Image 1 (tube, rainbow, N blue to C red):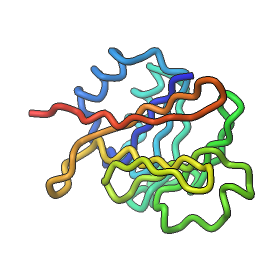
Image 2: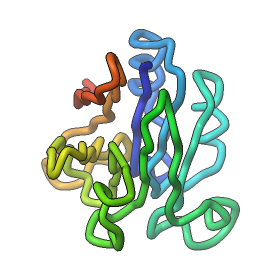
Image 3: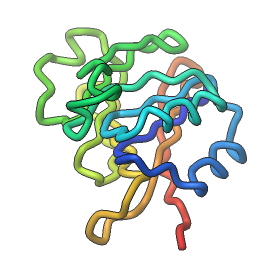
Length: 156
């Protein structure tokens, strides 16, 4: 199963992201880890695959404010837990049988493993922040195991 993971679009849907989604798909699902900024972004992502999205700290008002703060979704037998800021994690993923924790907020892409749980931050595919890359991630679930890859977008 191929899953695209994006975060921190902040109202900017980059054509480079759309191009990469078209080239690297088809995706079974797209996960947006918050700071959407504009619900039209979710509509555009839905043209590629079903979307599960949560709200981030900039999504407090308007239509994006109605998104849940956290979400648990089961894909290909794996429980995936989404929250915007990893420091807000208030449960033990391993005890809750969560296989993947997805977060955003920091704009810093990261893949780590702790206690048999994959932690994934796809970075930001919205406006550039400091010298951080513009990126998203691909989550693969194959042979009952999740793996992730950060994809840096080439922007002008």
